[in-house]
Length: 204
Image (tube, rainbow, N blue to C red; front, side, top):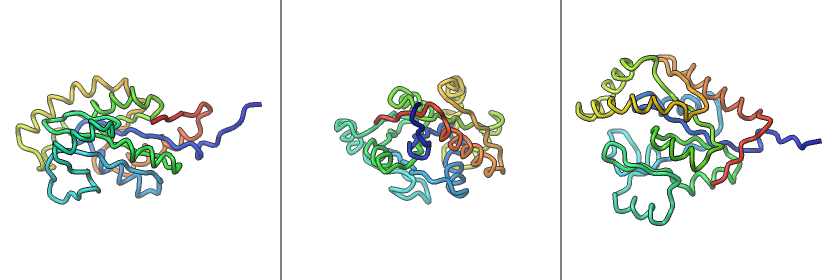
């Protein structure tokens, strides 16, 4: 008779992705608020801090030289240049959390998710999207964090990102002013994955 592996004893890596402005940060905060326990991986980046952002909390803000040194030392699980800035996922942080038995959530753009699909194929990949492209445009503009040129660049990339949908295991629509529903949908996916007969084997 096969041995039964309780899902809670096997930590997951959840990769949350989607177009810029879709609400990934707000969704992660919402998941935490409803009591889901996980380790959130803080991404390293070379972009400038935005008002209200804290180093080590929102991102690890690095110089391009420091970032390049991490690449040389193979300290990043994945990295990419996005809109002129570099972003990367610290490998050590993910490995340490898994060793402690903690589920891990990684927030990346679609390009980063494609790389992680090759590096960690047994991770859970969730694509977050808005009900319509027009709503996504409104959300990006409402942030007031990007120049008009940057907004146009981001929107041109949305079509390409949507074409990558088949890379993902799940798709969750983030409806405006209903964050609780979005957070519960993602939490439900995590709970479901804990009950898989064939468990996911994560190797970093």
